[in-house]
Every structure is written in structure tokens, then in C-alpha cells.
Amino acid sequence: MKDFDALKDIWTAQAAVPKLSPEDTLRKVKQAKAGYANKLLIESFLMGGIVLFLAGVWVFSPFVLWTSHVSLALLIVCCIYYLFVQFNDYRGITHDANYLEQPEKYITYLKQHRSRRYLLNTRTYAAYSVSIGLAFALYFIEVFLAAPLWQTIAGVSFTIAWFVFCFIWMQSYRKREQEKLSEMILNLEKIQKQFD
Amino acid sequence: MLNKEAFFKEIFQANSKKIYHLCYGYTGDEDAANDLMQETFMKVWQNLDKFRNQAMISTWIYRIAVNTCLSWLRVEKRQAKDELTDNIIENKKEEPSEKNEQIALLYKCISKLEESERIIISMVLDEVPYPEIADISGISEGNLRVKIHRIKSKLTEIYNRYERF
Image 1 (cartoon, chains in turn red, orange):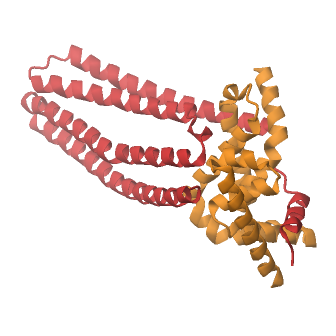
Image 2 (spheres, rainbow over the protein chains, first blue to last red):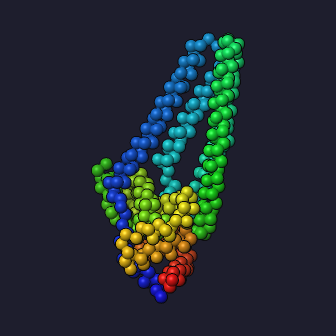
């Protein structure tokens, strides 16, 4: 039979030491920072290029119908919104100081954060997809009137196929994400009660 | 920058062992403990400017470690529960000695406690003062004393039960 002091002696005698040094940690910090920054930079350049391309098409193409103008405006807004979400995400990762809070507050923050992510992946993503779909549909009205029929059919078919692919992929992604989030929130609620 | 790095190294050396114990007590896994400790100190580095002039820097570091551990649970919980015991036993297989067996058993018993209890008892075992534990966990000191008393009895009972077999 051992009492708590005996357990404390066992604990004190343990040789368990971390394998990491401060240098390892600093290296990892720099790598992570560079990784995020690079990812964001590449995405910003890509999206910036797409926005410039769309703006060029808008300015230099003699569109006749108002639907084409709405279509390009919608596409540009979607690209800018995507960039905004990415920047926000990056800021959240690098400037988040919520982990300095006491556990109960931190858990509340995590639950809210998870709910926001869920909304972003479901409702917001759906609105984003519908906007892009609508933009393409509006654009194809002019294509239909100006270009040969086969070009319209090919363009519409490709766009529909792409949307179907994204929809199926997103369905499974959303299902996985939802299951994970539900489990996390359930766990967090359980732990939160332990700190009462 | 050099000053910042020197300051970081200083607080890393002063706190890393205890933070590692907390992470190890929480996860029961050496690799996960190293990962969580690294994550904790990465956050410490990002917030180092806020820490300057803080009287109790260890409280802040512990709080980050506790929150990092709680976040880890939400992803790894299922695996941790299933494999915890095996991991500990495997990790300790290299040097079978009575002392190592006792340490492995102690970690195994800690893994049987609730999440918050694991965190609190790791700090108690590392002799973190009660007011600091109260500040880190956000539990009032009176309530904490009652909790600690209960956790100590629970852990001792579990340990003695396992040791008999």
C-alpha cells in the first residue's frame, strides 16, 4: 500500500525529459510561419491573376448583354471574397491569443470557433457555389447568342461536370467535417463541466 | 531579435520539463507529449512580447499548455483511450526496472482520471503552488483544495488497486 507521498516520490524520480530543444522549437516556428506565408502568397497571386484576367476580359470584350457584366462582377466579387476568407484565416492562426485565457473561456471560444467553421463550410460555401454557378449561367447567355451552338454546349457541359464533381466531393468533406465537429463540441462540453 | 531568442531560451529551459510532464500526464504518450510541448512553446514565442514584465510567466505558459492539451483531446481522444496503456508499456519496455515499472504504472493510473483531474494532478505532483494552479485552471482556491484532496485519494486508490495485481 502506497500513500500519495510515495506516488510523489515515484513522479519526482522519473527521468522523463523532453526530446526537444529551444532551437528545434524556433526552427519549427520559422518553418510554420514561412509555410503559411508561402501558401497565402501563392493563393493571393493566383487569385490576383484571375481577378486581373477577369477584369481584362470585362474591359476589352465587347459584351452586348447586361447579364455578362453581372456575371463578371459576380466572379470578381467571389474571388475577392475567397482571398478575404484566406487572409482572415491566416490572421486567426497567427494572432490568436485566446489560448492565454482560462480553460473554461478557452473552451467556449473553441466551441464558437468550431461553429463558425461549420457555417463557413456549409452555408457560406453553398452561397459561394451558387454565386459562381449563377455567374457562369449568366455568362453563357451571351455565349449562346454569339458563339456556335457546339461551343455553348461544350462550355455548359464542362461547367456542369465540374460543379457536380465539386458538389460530390464537398458532400463527403462536409460529412466528415460535421462528424468531427460534433464529436469535438461534445468532448469540449464534457470537459467544460469538469472545470465548474 | 537576439534578446528575444535569449529570453525564449531562458524560459524554455526553466519550464520545459514541467510542461512536458503535464503533456505526458495528459496524453500518456511520449511523442504526443513532445508535440504538445512544442506547440505550447511555439505559442509562447508568438506571444513573448505580451509576457515581458509578467511576474508569473510560468502561469501563462501553463495556461497555454493546458489549453493546448484540451484542444489535442478533441482530435486524438479515441486513439488515446484505446492505446494509452499499450503505449506507456511499450515506451518503457526498453529499460525494465522496478522504478520504470512504477512510473509506467503511475502514468497508467493518471490516464484513468478525468481530463481536468489529469491536468491538476500533474501540476500538484510537480509542486506548482495551489494559488497558481487555481489561477491556471480558473477554479477558486477553496474549490480547488477540495478537488485536489479528492483526486489524490482517487489516484492513490487506483494505484494500489493496480499494484496488487
